[in-house]
Amino acid sequence: TQHLLARAKQHEALGAYLALDEEVSLAQARAADARIAAGERTPLLGVPIAHKDIFVTRDFPTTAGSKMLEGYRSPFDATVVARLGQQGAVTLGKLNCDEFAMGSGNDNSAFGPARNPWDPARVPGGSSGGSAAVVAARLAPAVTGTDTGGSIRQPAGFCGVTGIKPTYGRCSRYGMVAFASSLDQAGPMARSAADCATLLTAMAGPDIDRDSTSLDHPAEDYGRLLGKTWGEGRDGASAAQPLKGLRIGIPEEWMNWADDAPTTDQRVSGDVTLRVSGALKQLEALGASLRRIRLPRTEMSIPAYYIIAPAEASSNLSRYDGVKFGHRAAKYDDLLDMYKKSRSEAFGAEVQRRIMIGTYVLSHGYYDAYYLKAQQIRRLIAQDFRAAFAECDLIAGPVAPTVAWKIGELADDPVAAYLADIYTLPASLAGLPCMSVPAGLGATSGLPVGLQLVGDYLKEAELLQVAHALQ
Ligand code: GLN
Image 1 (cartoon, protein in one colour):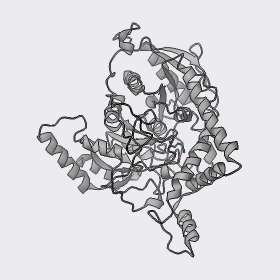
Image 2: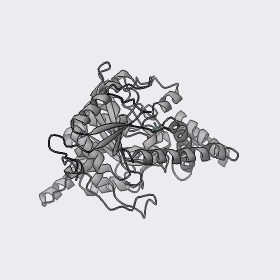
Image 3: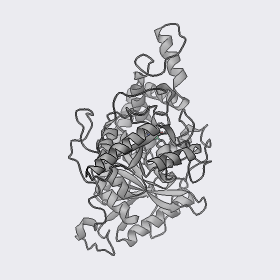
Image 4: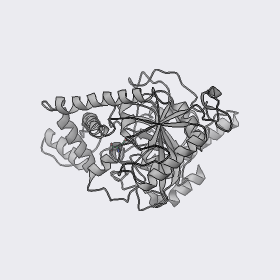
């Protein structure tokens, strides 16, 4: 803990931490030491980790990357934070993120950007940018993140680390500052699939009393399949070919995989095509079989998500009115003016944009045309996955169309950033477990490329098993 706190200070220029408190972290570390001295042995006892600043914490301030919550201190810990704490994990601090997790580059944070350790002129991805950056820069062995439409997978991909978003409902949303409640899901990011499994095992599990969408499914050991042969060797898997019998589907809308000559549509960069293909060939060498599948509504996931997520956000963010908590304008005429000024002053441009879009698509006369349509498309996308999983066990493809872009490059073009979410949004809309696994450095850019794996509902252990086989 001392070593990593010193490293955090050394690397302040990364902009990864929003809050550090040496006294609190060292007290937690001493408490873990006492438990170890008393003979306790659990995998996370004394392990220093850090939390995305979307999780509320009693011992550290919580901002969600927004001026609205500057100076806010939660009276309780998020369930995910509490569970990791009970397992003995030590909190190093709170990590930078896009304001209310809205963004893809961590450049929507009210407290300045986080930077990509591979090239500080570039974004670490978002919205869990600080999370990915500290793991990549070795400032923390593992961290928490949240993923609404790609916010764990895309930054993990951009920074060359491993991250998993479990099935919607696996991790409690209690104490996670809400963005789009039907999509928000917590997950770990770390250096390996094995470390992610250890964290997820501690984080996940039912919490029905506090989160009505929490899955009533017993706790699992997500690392139970690591190093095992696929299907327990039923299909001839062996030590040499541990993934024999595994059928991997490659959606032709994501990547064209035909006769060993992968091509992608123009939106995917050469670096991404080459490295993702390389990872797929590696999976083939491990025994997996690759096949083309279809996810025909991939393209529609963008408009559907960018209606549903802002709609839910506009509702969730209505609580920040400057009365109960959050920023309150210093000068105002009456109550309405106070609301207006407080919200205009404290919400950033992207958050205001989404509140306006969300309010519009939910308003009378537009609800049917936009919100309802988007929900119908969402259902169809989930059905497409259902059909796809009849033909394969797992889906693979790119995490994002490109490697990390330069900070500021997309600042004036929010739609370009939305379009880059094309490969992460489908699994989010369907609520499926999915992850990002490092696939190597781009030959041209020298920057990390991520391979995305998507599993059927509740198949986190299988996803981690396959990712582990690659590592
Ligand atoms: N980039 C997406 C957005 O801006 C996803 C963000 C997220 O998953 N929190 O909404």
